Length: 346
Ligand code: SF4
Image (tube, rainbow, N blue to C red; front, side):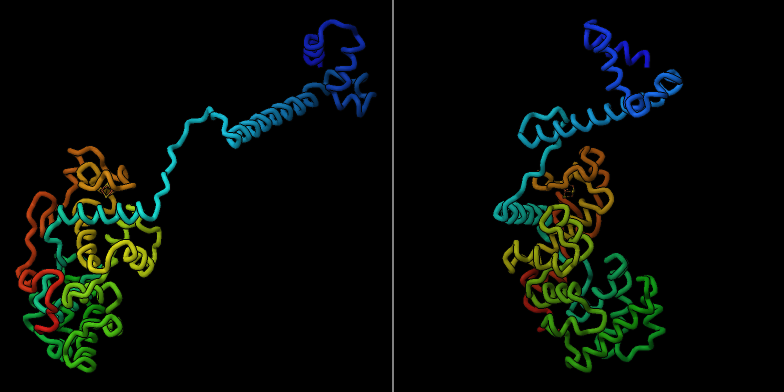
C-alpha cells in the first residue's frame, strides 16, 4: 500500500493530497468496496489485494502487445520475429516439369533399371513377385531357382506336395501363406487360363495373392504393357518429391500416372525403385550424394555431407550411379521395355 501510494504521487507529481488520496482510492478496489477495512487493517490486506491487479495489469498489457503484434503482421508491418521461409507453392505445370526432369535424371543414373527379380517367363515372374512380399528380391532370387527347377510349370506347382513347397520357400518368410498363394495361383492359371498367365489387369487381380502392384509388375515386364508399381520405395519417394500427398497406393498410382505419359510408367517405376534402394533410403537418405538433390524438396532429410552420404549408398545387384548397370540376360533377351511379350513366348 505504501509503495503504491508513493508511486502514484511520483506519477502525478506533487500537486496535492487530494489527488494522491483519489489515486489511492482508485488503485485499491478493496478499499472502495469496504472502507471499514481500510481504516482497521490496511497493512495486512495490502500485499495480497494489490498483487492481483498488478498481475492482471501485466497480463492485460502482454495480451495487448500480442494483439498489436498480430495486427501489425496482418497489416503487413515488419515483424521482429525471425521469418520461417515459406514453401513456394508449385503450379501444376511446374510440378509436371520437375517430375519429368527427375525421371530423366534417374534414367541417366540408372540406364538399365529393370525388375530385380530373376525370371525367365511370365509364370516365374508372377510367382517371384508374390514371393517378394515382406522380403528382399535377393532372398527371393536365392530361393526361386530350386522352386522352378522342381516345379517349372503352373501344372507342376499346382499338383505339388504343399509341405515340400513350404520347405523350399521357408527362407522367404511367411512360407506357409506364400505356399498357399503360389499353389492357389498355379491352380487358377491351370483351371481358368489354360496354364498361361493372363495379360489383362482384370484377370490378374483375380488370381490368389495377386494385387494391383504384382499385376502391374507382370504387365509391365512380361507383356510390355505400361503400369506403375507402387511398392514401399515408390510410396516413400513420390511423397518426398511432393508429387502427391496421397497415402493410399491406388491414389498414388493415379496421381503419379497423371504426371507422365503412359508409355513411361513402367520405366519410371524401375527408376524410382532403383533410387529408393540405392540412395534415397527410408531412414538415412544419402542426400549429399544424390544426383537429383537440386530437384528434391526433401533435400536435407538425410545426410548432406558428401563424404558421409557416400558411405550410405547401397551396392546391390545392378550397382549404383557411375556404374553401367547390367540387367539379367533373360531381360535383355526379352528386348527390355517395351518388350515383346514374354507371355507370348511362354
Ligand atoms: S535429396 Fe535426399 S530426400 Fe531427396 S531424393 Fe535425394 S536422397 Fe532422397
